[in-house]
Length: 248
Picture 1 (cartoon, helix red, strand yellow):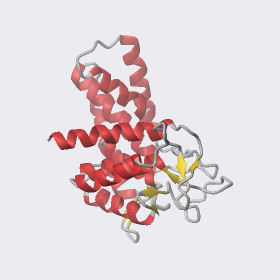
Picture 2: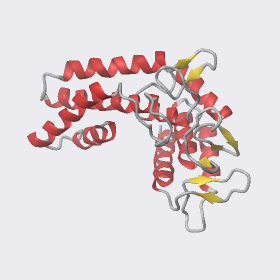
Picture 3: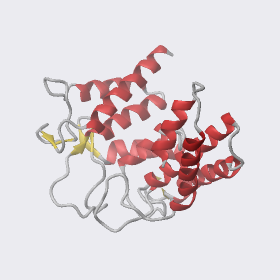
Picture 4: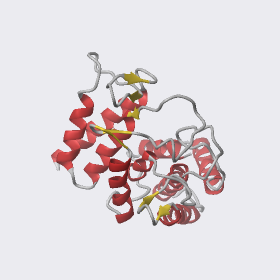
C-alpha cells in the first residue's frame, strides 16, 4: 500500500491531473492499510517463520495513510482525509512506543517489541515515518551500525540466532542496508561519514559497475541475485541525497 501511494503522491505533486477511477483505487488502498496493518505478515524479507506484526510493514501502512491524506488535502478530494491523517499519526506513535526495546535501547523488528534489531528500520526515516533525528531513531541507527555490522561498512539484515527466518544457508551482508545507513547519516547531519561509507560501497562494484544482492563479509565475494535492483536503487538514491546535501 505504502509504495503505491507514495509513488502516486510524488507523481501528483507537480499538479498533474488525477483521474477519478485512479483516486477511487488509491482511496481503497488507504482504507485497507488502515485496517490490515494489525495482521501478521512475513515482512520485507519474506521470512519463512511465523508471521508477526513487523515494524517495517506497519511503517509502510503509515506511509499509505499519510500520502493518501496529503493527496486528498491538496486536491480537496475526500472527506476521509481527517481519519487517514489521524491514522497515520497513530501508527507513528505506535511504532515509536510499541516497537521500542527499553533494554536494548533501540526500536525492534516487531511492533510488540518482541523481536530483535533489523536493518529495515533504517527505511523508516527515508519514508518520513519517523524523523531521522528523533532520539529513538538516532539510537536505533547507531545500534544497527554497531550490532549488525559485518565489517568495512557492510551490514547484516538481522542476526539469525536472534531473528530465525526459517531459511537454509548462510547469510551475507545485504548491500541495500548499507545505502540506507548512508541516507540516515545524511539526514542526521553526518555528511562526511556518509560520503566515506558511500565511496567504500561504490568501490565494491564489479568492473561493469554492478552490485549483487549480498556480499560475503569475509571474502568480498558477491552472493545472491546479481545484478540486484535493490542495490542499484540504493546507490542511485544515496548518490542523489549526497549531491543534494552538498548543494545546501
